[in-house]
Amino acid sequence: MTGNNQDGVHSSGLLTRLGLMTAILIVVSSMIGSGIFKKPPMAADLESGGLLLLCWVIAGLITMIGAVTNAEIAGLIAAPGGQYVYFKEMYGKAFAFIYGWSCFSVIQSASIASIAYVFSESVNAILPLPHLSAEMESFSILGIFYPFASFGVKALTIATIIFLRLRIISE
Image (cartoon, rainbow, N blue to C red; front, side, top):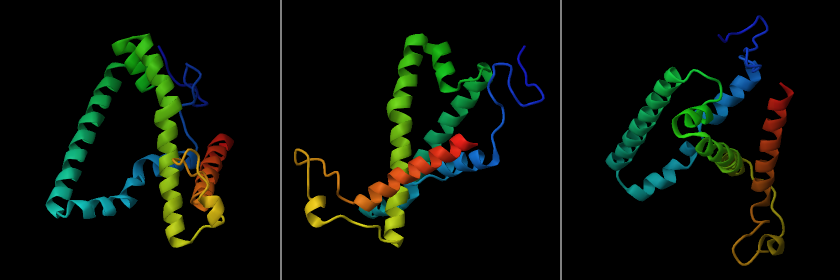
């Protein structure tokens, strides 16, 4: 039998509570979302309010189906570890291992980076961030990657990720 002791520590050794600031950062980073700031330009491409509404309804239904599915699985597999544990129980250790590493190396890091970048672009729209010289910003690697273009936006993106990570570690 598993349970919590008086200090809020699960018998597995995991903390079962979050600090106020950590909880706020989780909600801000995952629930509010940054996609809403990029939707108006995409909506202009559709040229139809009805099609836009249909897209939102379909996305909402897919999200609700995923949430209900996760809730059902969480009710069946009551163990700490989330999706990793669910995949381990359903598909085996190899699949769970691949999921865990892909989540760590791509899924979560790309999500964090894209949200921070959209935040930085929004800040840049209100308060113009610094730029490098035109020569520096035109520097490219293989004509594909321009590492110094929008330098202020990229620097704020990196600073935001570091700040939030240090804030979470300190709690």
